[in-house]
Length: 401
Image (cartoon, rainbow, N blue to C red):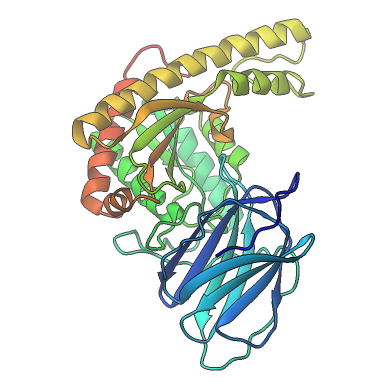
């Protein structure tokens, strides 16, 4: 049982807890509403691994099945303002890593503990505070092998520039496909321990392969290996490529394991208004909207032009979202209720590029996870997404030339 103190205002809340085991590493993940400090308690008991935390509002279900090394997890508040998380293990173990992953694309903070079995009872204490080391690279079965290391930055930038130059002059429309997360940010973790970043990279490669075979569209990936790219940089890649469409791929996780199915997000009206105002307030207005230099325009004209372009982009995004739902429903029938949804995700905020985020399924649902890890299902889903992309980009009302 969890011993909880009375809820306090502004305390970080633990909204979900899960564990998974892979290659001898048992990972415990807490979904937290805000950043938290932590330190390991060196009490010498190698079967009860303790971490000190601030006083938390514990809302997660404490009934977690035994997974890997983990038998039981408890949280208590021994003193006001201070909390203690204890992981009871099935054999002597050590907390090898503790780190906090900041929120991405609307997700919560995630406090991650990686446990490994040890023959002795000693443990190396982890210094207090938020540590930034990347999680171990755990590649689940049926996902692509890691790509070779990237070339030096200069060579990479030159190659990217050359590829974009060729594609802009090929006469074909351009789609930029964005596999979410990557590198230090693994994204969601499935029931069996697979990482979202690997699953969506596999799916993105499948979509690109389908489009390359069709030959109607030039497809680019924001990342083709396990690297971290900031959210705004993903949007910048699409704009610098003169993309006609931006598609971000993700896989969600929630506390309710029964929720399943694909959903499609476009920019919400509130987020659009706020983003338009932020863009209008920028000092350098020469590149807010492709092909329009707003640097000499009045604030009123700037706001109107940005609003017009962004509303057209939102309408086109909604049109593509409906096309995705239509094509996916033909092949997979794995759709979340109210499939088309609206949010303020940062990757949807390019004012002049139609942008859609596809949550390909829920890694917290056993069926969705198994399907997304299965190459045959990913091929079906990739084919549906490729058809939707080709159909959308074949229309004459594309925003960019």
